[in-house]
Length: 89
Image 1: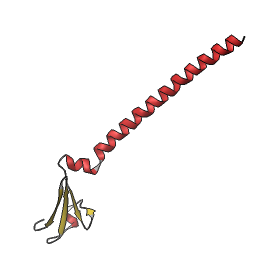
Image 2: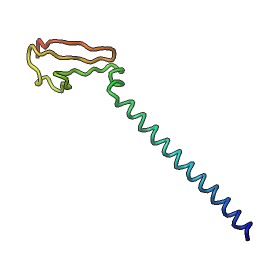
Image 3: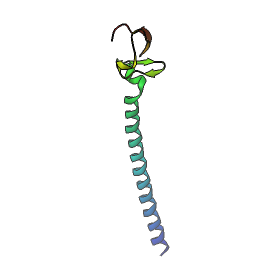
Image 4: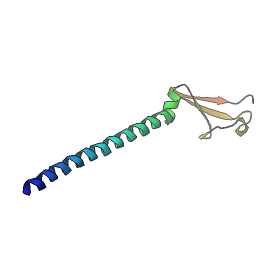
């Protein structure tokens, strides 16, 4: 009888260990997927792929209608920034 309980306890322990390992691996996989998405969406990563962000007064410029001739704009690049003056719309 004690041997049966001992064997049952061993079986349940192995099952629990396998279950926790599966949960852990799924969690790691999810974290890796989310991390990869964050890398792709990171603004600095986007700049590293050749894109730039143009800003007016510290806010991203979304449309030319947000500026007029003579407005100073700042363009952030992967390795630095440029300050320009709008001369033509």
